[in-house]
Figure 1 (tube, rainbow, N blue to C red):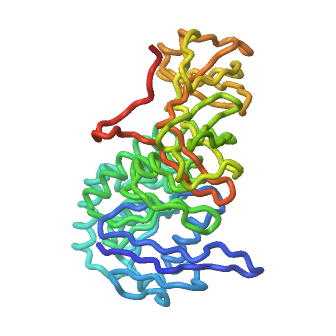
Figure 2 (figure 1 turned 180 degrees about the vertical axis):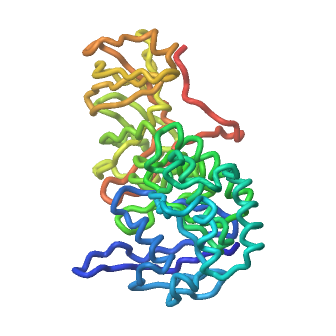
Length: 388
């Protein structure tokens, strides 16, 4: 295997469209790094540049510290798996696996030994004599992955390889991919627009938006500590609630409100001296998982009143869409807790906001001003305060 380095990589297509605006990242040996972002963000363009299928406008690509920017795709010793299987329909599974080895003029004994090893790992030994048309979608995808693995490439490039599979098969393939990456000790650069794939499979995630990197972090860090408003709202299901924050300075303290409801009066993280200004535009971020439906007699600070707009039941969880004076807010709670609150459309309902679980963003720059606090002063994990 090998490490991969991308240094100030940029790509501008004819007509002046800048698909990538100088991105840089390092993929360590045997690391699985995901390029995650919306359609048109530049993910596949990055992968094609690394593979040598596109010519970079600026920047360098290094594999094992060798500059391969001007090398042909064949010289780079990379293997690529696409979202479509691209198997040869007239060849057996064995011959599909053998094809990349035959064009490299590997000996027949070495080819059979390599295919036997990969087929055993992928659990396709009994499929070697079949044609692709005789395989299920999941089996075809395993063969496509096997064709890449037999090459013993320096780095594996994967472009949404399981996006077209059904939900159950995708879930199984996510587990298999992680196992394969560990068993083959492979260096992987994986493109996806599905955050569930990235959160469950990646060692690190590179979040890309409009050709620029928003943040590079481990999955849980990206969820807990987003550096931008885009990162905060793109990662998480259901998405983070974003509302206009109302800030006022009183007696050396910033008072935070949502639609007139007091949230953060006297909270330490809103103390004077912080880089805040009462007359500047801010956005408040609230994860649905961090909000708590309020009991009718709960009058503590942080209570926000509203009405039920919709209720979604998701088996073990229930999501309330609540219309408030500050905007629509989604609250995710357990089924047992949901049963204690009104569900009729238009019924009055309230939820509580724990100030320590509030994110604050600069509306002008999109940068995060304040992160949520998940630990107390003693370093113990905190959870939002429940009703008393």
